[in-house]
Amino acid sequence: MNFSFIQITDHHLTAAESEFLRGFSTRHALRTVLRHIAQNAADHVDFIFSTGDLVDVPTEASYQASLDLLGARNDLSEIPGPIHISVEGLQNFPMFVLPGNHDDRTHFYKYLFPKSPSAPIMNTVFVHKGIQFICLDWGPHTKATAHSEMLEFLTHSLKTDMPSIIMMHHQLVKLGSKWLDDFIADDVSRFWEVIAGKPVLGIFCGHVHATYESVVNGIPVFGLRSTAPQFVLQDEPLACLLPPHYRLVTIQNGTLSTRIFEVPL
Image (cartoon, rainbow, N blue to C red):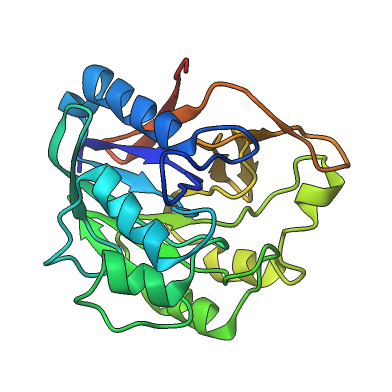
């Protein structure tokens, strides 16, 4: 049961090196983060986990360019992976990938998981060294939706005594920023009702481009800065240039701990 993995999130990759997001090269930033992982953490972790928004504009060209950037081998991958990437010192390294609100589910499946049939939302589960990873999809919109299908999948997945970690793109907790807090599902309480009393070690989210830690009903909830531009935690939308983060997650003897790495660009 003892192992570590890395969370990264919200890459917003463009289709070409010459394309920028608000003047920012998301492709350069992700490569820099992956290089830092290769040099400082990869020897001690089992896999990387990306919690959504692989691309910014979800065209087929963007997905193909993203696979090329990652040096990805996906011919045998089923949701949520791993695909295997070879880039910036990482060689054939396993990486799990979830869709975010910027991801077109049809293109996402076609390019990353051609062995899996496409679906409007992507809920799946896998087990790694005695820990169940439950991967949830709150939908393709900026504001999360607690789909009945997703809640039923979660309910079924938690019918086990196995410890679980829940991975998702959308956030669950308020950060004190009106426009970001509005992204939370109006009926998010249904989610908390389903997991109440279950052996959930932690929940990992993306979407708001901010690093935070919270505890809800005794369950730790973690957010993370993107590898793209960050958001200022204020009531009106504003992006800023803070160094990206990645999170090292360690499970040891049934206890979960995390450490943040900041990557200078």
